[in-house]
Length: 345
Ligand SMILES: *Cc1c(COP(=O)(O)O)cnc(C)c1O
Image (cartoon, rainbow, N blue to C red; front, side):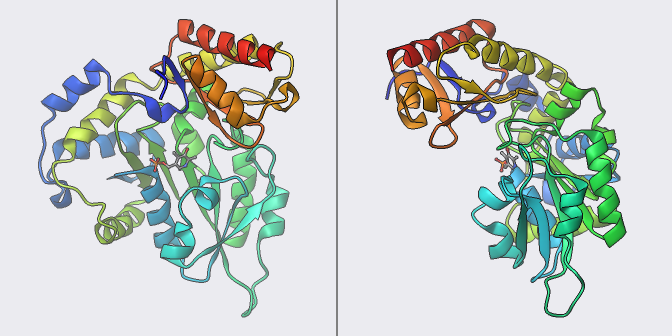
């Protein structure tokens, strides 16, 4: 494989910084399962405070946060409303069906974001032969929507529908802090309409692993049972939780830098013949390469030959992600590479 100089494949590509590694090395630890790990406890307190929720639990991954939430909130045979592009539907190996026995009604949103009217239309009538609608799930920001932000008002409108029909509101907040920083809305304000939500530590926040799931004390107690059952309860996990503490203290407001670089990258490639950009709201830059005559796969390979890695989203769609391990010189290099590949096509 070619040497990669610029990796825009994903914000999961970050390596723990020296400061983060130092915090991990110094972390006080104990037995997490017994509630005795001070670093894990600190992380959970910080996450609960950040989101304005009663309680929080440290989880090995965002996927486990989604799955445990579905398992706690839903009964087998229930139905969830989620956008058709959601991670819950497309990227969790069918977990909601396999683990919770739940089905999901996909909504045809715009760039991952649906309206209150669409949510209301998707709620099933109560009848013995019709699945019970139980929960509305939204993804902040929408990953497959190109990092699009659910505006606070839209969330509140959807939450009104949830209230009207007695539905649970759950947020996949893998990149919720990107949305908060980009739109100047506090995490707690975004979180307010939700019964449960989680934030990923291993994306833009730069941690090696982990996510924190937040909600009421009752909800978190029930999640703990699933964390045990699924084998997600850990021991001296303060070593990794300390990275999360460090990230919440140091890596949140700097997400704005990732957004600035994403916009700059988009600007730099916007005039290249054959490239069609999606709107850029946060750290994800999607572009279509169809008019260059190349597929995304070939485009990806030709970029790799130039030391630049950019993800393939679809047959003709590419996905570039900025994160704390890329700087402006690398962004310029990546944009040049895109221009070269397009020109040579
Ligand atoms: C990455 C991601 C997840 C899963 O998180 P992991 O920590 O990788 O399990 C879920 N939802 C969205 C939107 C994501 O981007």
